[in-house]
Image 1: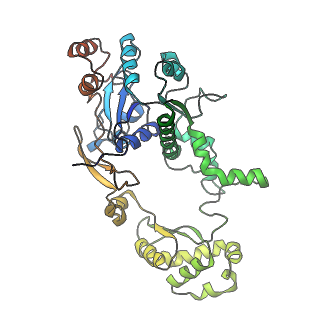
Image 2 (image 1 turned 45 degrees about the horizontal axis):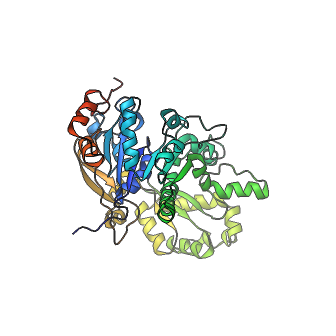
Image 3 (image 1 turned 90 degrees about the vertical axis):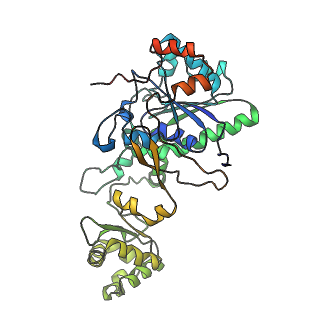
Length: 412
């Protein structure tokens, strides 16, 4: 008999878009929550469903690797909230749900008649999440945006790159991947509050503010010392050397960070105790920091004569923090990820077998059980008939009026 999952029985409506919001609800779904991703055939998530890469390089509504990565373990049902009957049906979803999540532009849910104030009057114990770039109020609240803009607003673009070059922002929508853990924890906290009091709660999350947590030391340095941190490549003030060093092969690198004298001695040992390392220039941290350019050049002369994997193995054995700078191909072949079974293959109704990354944590008594992301409207019959209790006739009428559908109005 399969073990019950941690969030089994939790019912979630997912009205989020693109990456960050769907990642939050995937956390819940992977741990057993029943998450219904409600989509519209007229205003579907074009940034997610039609985002590359596509299976076999062929674009399609149900062939996006981006969508599958952020929507595993969910049900998909379609509903047109712009139609009066769509609104009527949505109230049934609200009465069914424990949690409602949305990432519309602030004000959109109120225009539709489904803001927290309206919903909580009918469903007082609802846990209601609004997720947006800048939050629900303030001078920028109504501005549209994505994770890249949130990362920029949080100061992260200014910090990345080299002193003599333009900013080098973090890869992708960095903010979209740091905000979900905060938000999932907030949902669980609100559910615990509801369990103890019987009352729901409203959660307002600003993507930019979530990202700002990762610039906390920089912000504190300005608040206390008046210093504005600028781009400094891979270097940081409390470690030397600290950077990515070239190794043998095409674009192969190893990241190394030395934070204390013991680690420095380990690095020297792994390099064969070169004579230059014994000189007064590098005898202590201040000397190494003062001569950082020269030190990096000397270390590069050693790393460039060895494979990245060999460098990492030797340094780790000597107690030095380091890692191969892995490519996507490296990740698939990584022995640690294989050992933890982090990458699993799921069976998708359109794409067939495809990879999925399992949660980054494992619960010993309630293991996750991921399933493939859904196709558009894949679970309409199950959701409307089994979960909401609509009759065949009611479902047929909704289909005839295109309140629900399995086809999208594509932009081509």
